[in-house]
Amino acid sequence: MTKIKDLPRFTRPREKLIEKGAQNLKDKELLAILLGTGRAGKNVLEVAEEILAKHPMKNLLILDYKKLAEIKGIGPGKACALLAAFELTKRALEVEDNNLPAINSARDAVAQLQELRQAKKENFVVLYLNARNQLIHKEIISIGTISASLIHPREIFEPAIKNLASQIIAAHNHPSGDLSPSDEDIKVTRRLTAAGELLGIEVLDHLIITAAGFTSLKEKVLL
Image 1 (spheres, rainbow, N blue to C red):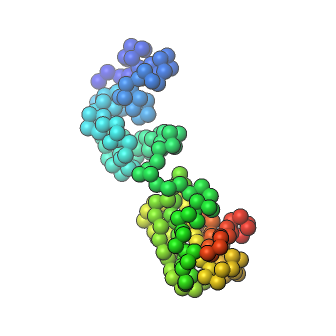
Image 2: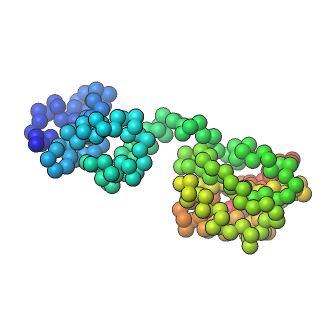
Image 3: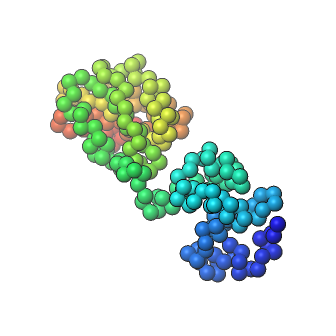
């Protein structure tokens, strides 16, 4: 095995990047820099070439942690580094996942909850978002009177864990048309927020929706 340090300086990935710029490196050289080290019997360039032969770059970009970590020459630590690099790139380029709707405000969330405006009974609905504020799942948790005893954190956060959500927005309607949050609404919100903190899933807002408009408990500093 030829060690990287034994290669001519102008062929070493890091030195080549510094001297010529990242745009002048081959795919295997860029991957080698991200990997950092090789494995027994192969230097990092050889490992990178071997990986790309089995997993072309476009396929590599969509692999999850488990599949990346199973690739010979990557392992858990390097899989995390690769996933972080891939995600930063996607965010910088504003790459959307399957054109998922972005929820960047209470108004954006309400746009996904129009059915609540005319609902005759109270519906408690949760929007589940990824780390880029994209809607990945929506679920009706209950239909009927909203209370802390009926809205259990387990029912709220189970879909979040299942769908790998990073944050949620809770919402329910007031068929009466009253946009003011009740004491029960505030109690439910604070209970969910506390549960979310324990699970590492942020509760971004709790919305009250009527035919005439909506109220954001976050904007009212009741979250």
